[in-house]
Length: 236
Ligand SMILES: [Zn+2]
Image 1 (cartoon, rainbow, N blue to C red):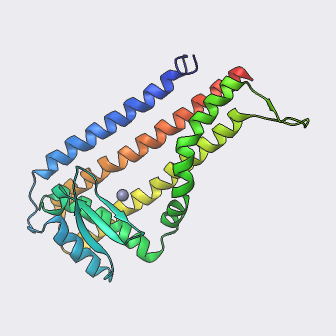
Image 2: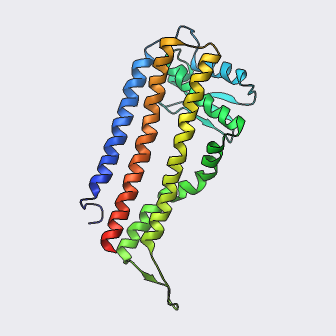
Image 3: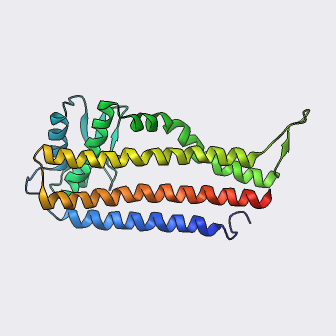
């Protein structure tokens, strides 16, 4: 009943947004993976050049398996590039590589939103798993749960929505971190003489498509939160 009422449409809209953004990223990435950069540099070469240019000497560059699994790990100071980025000289690969370097530069310069995001990781992981079950339990148990031996009651639904909200906060903080990494990517690609002009436009399209997936998942999470608040209002 809780999961199949009319407000479920909000969850479906969120899921469609995420699928559309992910599909758009995959097709954009595929398109520009076929466009070879004039520099002839691979994703790995570009990363090494960008990091050196930024004066960063303690970040390792590694190859990881999978597709679009590229990420920067601040704990081990490792930039992990997927096979199709690490070994490819396409404009898509260079764009993604430069974006991950953007995160390494954020870390190196102590960019505040990245620090906030890193601090939120443990609590956000717990909240994203705990929020929804708490709300569900709240609906099953009823609104106000009395605390035995006292006159107080507590409301699991409100606690669940609050916990779920923390996970959403994490997704919202992720947005400026991702946008800023792409802005930095564009700057370093130019400054390091890796690409310019039309190639830059292609790389930008890949980075914009990647940014859209973060916007879509944040929007989906907000829609879920809105739905929980609607359901709570109905019961209240
Ligand atoms: Zn990123």
